[in-house]
Image (cartoon, rainbow, N blue to C red; front, side, top):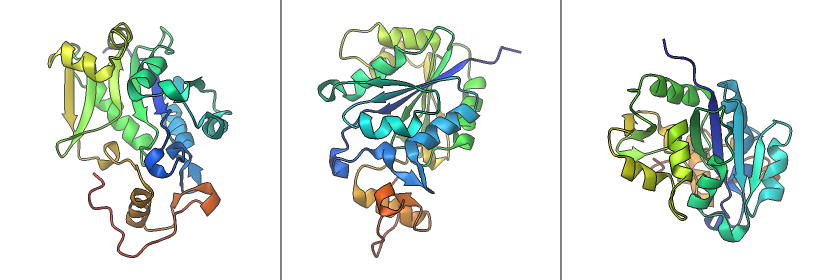
Length: 229
């Protein structure tokens, strides 16, 4: 039996949230708990020992949400908080003891412990030649993306401006594989206030929203989750 991997994770939370009206999506609350905090707690419940949270313009709002959880926060200047820079900055902070990394998006509001355990099970069942794995749900790529220690090192060693997707394309299908899943949590995110309202309606209403609004967005008629992945 192969040894249990030492897990690490990077949560990408440096986005400006422009389409969300300039609000940090990691601060959205699901059942009264900020999404960013929910993700960290779920990771820790799955035995992920080192969690890096990459922050940007909204660092002052997001950092306190996880300050008591022992995570490592990396804050990027707003001018350099694009996705690729965020990926590389977060992955570079994982210590050598981490041999398997998860890469998550802070606006994956439904991710929970059971979802992350599904990810870990898929990784445990992969061929040893596979160094990166990602979920595909109904033809749509999702997150978390999983990377071996050697894949993390390879991503960070690329030329400036190249991120995880660049390395995956170069590594080829033997080293990078998808696994088919029916779990829509891997492809559900939110980009706009309307997305939040639709998802909250699908959840039954009054569960997802901003803390200043009592944790849920005001309801609107005709809301549904169609098109949310």
